[in-house]
Length: 413
Image (cartoon, rainbow, N blue to C red; front, side):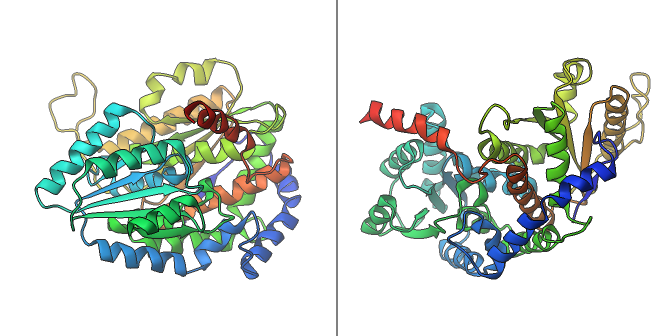
């Protein structure tokens, strides 16, 4: 599990706990949803880590697909960002075994087609997984159609469709003989990473999805507590207090490049769940340390005081490097590990933020293991549900998004 350091969040423990106390009934309701397996409830995603069927379905189909040389996830928004977040954190941003076809960029999709053809030509295995909850996502259907049409069909190409039960996409897939995975009806895209939406492609890559879901399960146990040891209550209360104080920009500042995907996933989670009305809206941003200190650091420290920051750090990396001797005339770094240098940059950044009275917390991860990432994502989802209740908005719908989709369909129809 991870640790939250919140001494510099801008509020006293008494203030934070007073807000957290207002959410105890909502925590009780989530516990009831889990206990009664209320899949018809909008918060149904909290049941997923307690329901072993989703892991089982993902692992069975992943085993059928064998050792894939390339996995192509065709999906956008909630249909791929959760997978991306876990995959980048666990297997790294340079993992060449997976490609994401999200938007309809012809050059990007053409590259994916070429790469898939190259793998198939060398008798490698390709898994093509199209993910669309509604079954009618414009970009997903366009990319899926282009890929299926362009790739030579053989025993080395496995096509899997993940969608809602009863959708037209499910019916189409079954008519073609494709394997189909279903998404629980009331589990929205941005909350779906622990359903087959995320579990299947991750299992194909060799990610231990059992440990991932165990991490989420353990986090949920803590998120259901009615005391000060509830990380979701803490995150929701601090975010709410900063929002009420005029901090309408909430920046997730990750100090590991492998966590940028998680930052993008959280950006969607917060934006779609909370962005409803001028009074409730929060603008989520993502920064990568130390890179973005050299682009927006000046603004962060000396610009408008509108932002609440969430530093996300990792104690134990998979690898480390040391600076060799002979460069001290430039910067005195001989023998220093990269981890030591990054830690010094982080401490210097936080000291500067403190001097400039910029509110921040630090979410300190012990590592980037499946358990840790599962716990992090699950805690974030519960905290955003609770934040929605504090701001009196529905954290489960996204009515404004449907507006552009409807116009798009009319223009293309």
